[in-house]
Length: 141
Image (tube, rainbow, N blue to C red; front, side, top):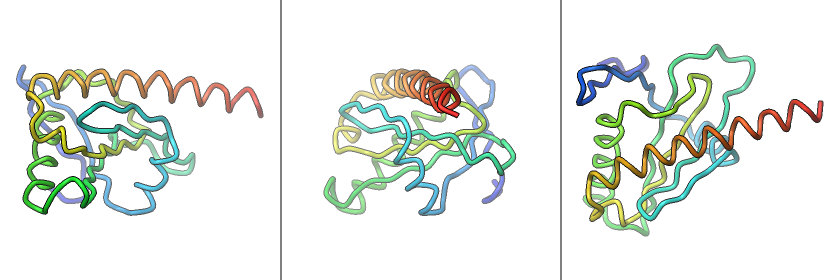
């Protein structure tokens, strides 16, 4: 797997989803100012990328604060979220958006099927919020 290029992820149904990793701190901070949806297990933040950048695959970042546990627990939570993302292929993502999943402690003990369902709801909700927000901005111009 390439570190810079989009990752092809195999879904349960055999299809593949394309995501690139979000790695720079500035990109995480920019996504934090966009639309968000909160569940007990995570918070999803989404923001459209700047106009100057060519739209590529949707970029997704993962973060877990120290307050939710030690390094072993934080890494386990991130792995569970990544796997839930991998098997949830019909997510409503946009290629010109950046997404950040902020982990909560509940993600460690939540049933995996519920975690996947929460992800689907979250992506659908932020898609609606971000499309509403962009149309409001366009009207103001």
